[in-house]
Amino acid sequence: MSDYIVTARKWRPMRFEDVVGQGHVTTTLRNAIATKRLAHAYLFAGQRGCGKTTTARILAKAVNCPNPKDNNPDNECEICREITEGRSFDVLEIDGASNRGVEEIRNLRESVRYAPAKGKYKVYIIDEVHMLTKEAFNALLKTLEEPPTHVLFIFATTEVHKLPATILSRCQRFDFRRIAIHEITANLKSIAAEEGLEIDEDALLLIAKRGDGSLRDAQSIFDQIVSLCGGTITHQQIMGALNIVDQEVYFRVTDLIKAKDAKGGLALVEELMSGGHDIKEFLGGLSEHIRNILIAKTTQSTDLIEVSDVYRKRYAEEAQRFSIPDLLRLQRFVNGTESSIRWSAQPRFRLEADMVQMVTMPAAVEVGELIQRVEELKKKLRSTQSVSQVPIVSSVPASFVAESAAARTVVPAQRPMFSKSSFVRSLPIQPPVVAVPIDSPQRPSITDGELVSRWHELIQEIRQQKIALGSVMDSAMPLGVNGGIIHIGCANEFQSSSIKRNKDLLSEIVQKVFNARARIEPEITPLTQKQAVPMKGTPQVHPPQDEHPIVKAMIRELGAEPLQ
Image 1 (cartoon, rainbow, N blue to C red):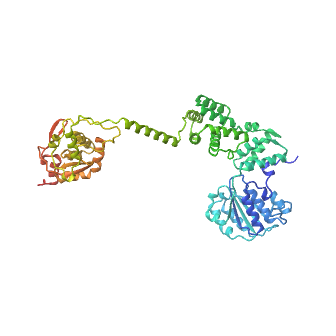
Image 2: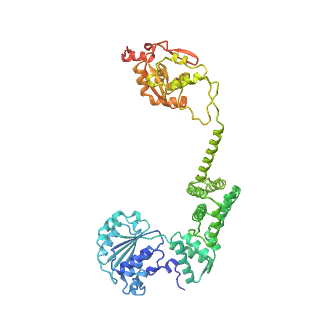
Image 3: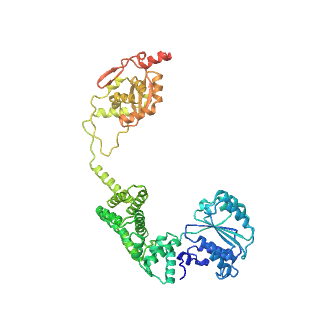
């Protein structure tokens, strides 16, 4: 009875054209051998199980084989057999993780001086080269840059970003790509045919998808399934062996979303938990399911969907039930749940809550449709306003309207100065109410009447923000409003400079009190004790300048003198 050999080793490629999915690499290497343009160092980078070490061995055999066939090793001579069996003195495979120190690299530097025993080249294959230490890389630099003519270095790594730039610049780099699902499926199908196994297309596709771009991983899963199922392998057997969530479950989720069935969503979570399925695997499959629907909806085709023909037809039908905004929102929601579930102390509870939220989520509205609705509402509003214009009340005296118009046309430089009391007396006791049309804009600024009637309120608000500034404003008087500018009368330069320094703060307080934007402009105006502003219906008499607390403090502490 012969020893069993796993599929990944038994069916390891022996020629360049047998390497699956890396034609861009193998073609370049064969041409380099044919034209005798071999580099002294190669770097093979790519994910696990994509053929890096296998290609390195084929290259080592090809450059040493005495009887190559179409730039491929014949795999029949003694040198090829020794390399294949791993007993050649001319091809040394070194594990970078186990021989990562500077001492091992120094020994390598000593050994490269000796000529090969049988072949033309002495080939050093260092796997997982990124595991070498910084000192080991530094020790390798000079030898790597100018090795003997009979030495060939081949480095393989899955984490090329960890290699120093000095190493990368001395190597000819090849990036091995992920192997496509259809290429893995074709390889497994040929192996099954050679082994005399019966396996359906859905089962092959499922194994290839579980390989995640790695042919070696897919072949390992293939070995596991053959051990379980024997000579006949079906899709359902693989589902049970690998505990994979059935594709029908994901179609049930989208059915629940369309039906807004939260109870059914919770029942589905219970079914998954009782079946022992992994939550992360379920969410990953659901994300792929929504992606497939989105692809079918966007492209109006199922060519980019990696499923069997039966499910391709179902995805084409499912795409008609959803809009693109809904699918994008569902995709983001599932991805968010998938990211947060790993940090949750109770993943099941989080999945149940998110399932209910996702199932009951209202349909999204496209931006174009929303804009169209807004435009329609605007048209209806304009048509309504044009019919329901309200005329101005006829009880307003014509003289008042004429006077108001004249007052608004006065040039600021010609505006007469007036005291608080005279300004108040000039205002009407009860201004007439004027009905404004519906579509007229709101009043842009503060009126003189509002300024005087709410002056006390403004002073109190200023005191709450800055008490010293409130005292200064309390000793000033409002002169009027013109063009969004509130003119304030000040008795001296001190009051005027204080107001100017706090213009921004005063503008914010005015905005808060009057709900209108205005700028404060102080003007020095002589004031007398008789000038007053009515506050809350009671006249308020201001003390003389010398009696003001701030002025007293300035005279007492700073020796200030009143202005003449």
